[in-house]
Image (cartoon, one colour):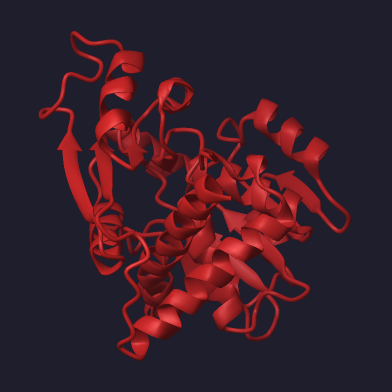
Length: 307
């Protein structure tokens, strides 16, 4: 049995296999071919952090695969309020076939997985967002933009940045991360990514977004203020001034460079209206691919139990 908590636990071959599975499922769906590969199975979805894309993609995906998704917010269950995480894990995993958790502390999902009898999927923690990276890379594959890529990440050193580092380390491409001073990536996670780096993997950190973007084939960013940081919003807007991905910054990238954003996008802050709309087709394909990549992941995890 395998859990999907971070990309660091997976080989290059396994990551690509999951994405290929998702692409095949997407192809079938577009042809109105529905394979009930998870028929009669139940996915428990625990949300301590709310989300549009995560709920819709997992719930829809499980339905299309012939199963059922059960939405559980922190108001619906005793997790973290009166019942230890390990007890909740034992109970839910005895009734569900798979569990997806979207929460704050990464240590919480690690503890849940330790006591779970079924695969646990990280729908997002403060440290990592690996399911989003599956969708991002799937999108690059679909747009034939995954060969010899140089990715520039501009913005906050957050869970998305950490997940990009792990993907670069595992798949072997160049990643340049530009953050304001004081908002760099977690140094422990960076050291771990560098230690795991395979041939071809280059991970650079800097404080100059223009240096990161110059010659890049993929430019990506994220909101400057994540959930739980609302009180810092005004201060962050001042500090992140100069980190907006606008036409001027995109002009430094390689001709035909792709722009990605995991959404929600705040126009006029991390990305300009013009850049977002110019690249909206690929961004919303990226959003849709959350559905297909996660279906590929769930099918893949289910097969690991049977092998």
